[in-house]
Amino acid sequence: MGREELRGKVAIVTGASSGVGWQSAVRLAEQGVRLCVTARRLEALENLQAQVLRQGGECLVAPGDVTVQQDVDRVVRACIEFYGRVDLLVNVAAVQSYGFFDDLPWEHLERTFDVNCFGYMRFARAVLPHFRAQRSGHVLNVQSMLSKGGAPLLASYAASKHATLGWAECLELELRGTGIHVSNVLVPSVATPMFDHAPTQFHLAPMPVPPTYEPDVAARAVVRCARRPGRTVVPVFLQGRLILWMDRWVPRVGKWLLGNFGVRMQMREKPVERTEGNLFHPVRQGVGPHGSVPPTPRWKRFTATAGLVALAGGALSGVALGARGLARAVR
Image (cartoon, rainbow, N blue to C red; front, side):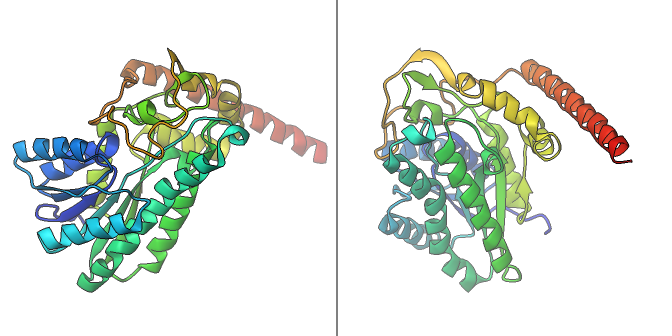
């Protein structure tokens, strides 16, 4: 697929009240994309709209809940009535809940799937008739590195992301030859307000699996995907392409790290009582792209990369020695 001109295109961005959704909307507006932004928090969306307008962009605010079909239909209808069309759907809205799988309330598991997976599907089904009528369109899904892996305490989130990526890959095949494209961005841990909103079954504030990146890393990847649709993009090396390579060739390294240290590395030394968070109702805190967890400094990411490469190299050497020993035994 060739490079697409974004100026003048119309995009719906979900989950735009904070984090990657907010920053993606800002970056798309800089490219001349006309925006329809949606999330549950009207005041936060109006703050985003004000920023976009100050920078010379166009932005329609259409609040709604991705788990409510009537809201989804209303948002799409408002966008088309205002701009006359829709060209790009950027699915971003997501929630997560921290806890061991068998301790998580069942309604947390259902709600996580309803937002992270079915929310994407609802919006896709709402825009696809318009895409088909104009013989063009783009469903761009902000996924997660946990769409292809796992982490302790995040069973509901990771499972919903695996399901969403599987759905997106099926949708891409079904839409081949229609002029409608499907893209995915596998986002690493990013320093967004998600971790200030997320419910937890523990008494310590959650934090992302390190290293943590700027939200702009994900937002710029969204813009690249919008320009060149039909791809799955992994925007970083350390918590991206290197992890996927290790999961394929030396999976025991990642399992050893996360199995032994994954729980500890996702908790801050900050007491908190937040069993519901923003899972069922929006909260006032955490507007904008950044949360209270800072990005990991670049030098620490380089150090971690070197350490992981060394671990992977050692594991591969062990596998090679074992294979040679097995070959000698067979002979």
